[in-house]
Image (cartoon, rainbow, N blue to C red; front, side, top):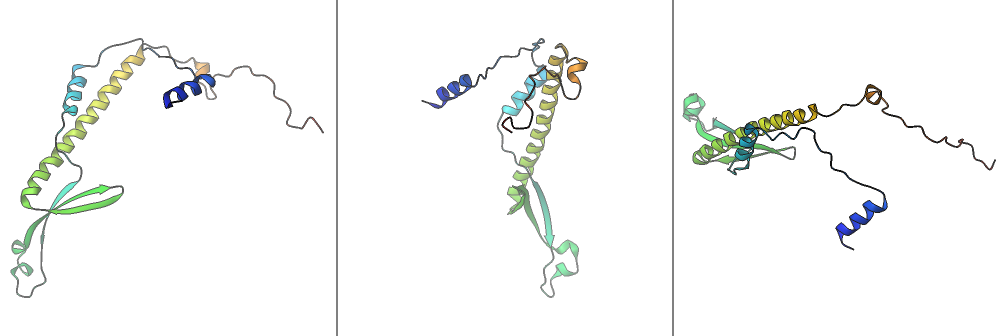
Length: 160
């Protein structure tokens, strides 16, 4: 028996059924949401993290960097990002830093568009819910709707 046949058997044997809940308001998504979805689907190089530029002072006696801050060594570029709760850094050349700066900006733009997409989809989902009936005051109370149930047997053992 394959996976799907087994899943079908399991769901039928335990009386699990599913039904499609249709929304009363089937309004299509706005053109803004469609535009954002198209933009998000377009792949481009992007990255998370930050880029820092540093100059350093060496410890050589007589080096100009010890006295003059404009004579320090560098700039050195470092790309830093958190991965699984740990900070990962790597040094980049000035050419790589320019590319990484553009990729980081593209990543920020992607996140902003994704957030706008989420907000648009949630507003759309809220509009769909507006036409549906809400729960009655009794059902909405803490504890929810209660059915009459059979009386339960006492906790004492019937043998004693």
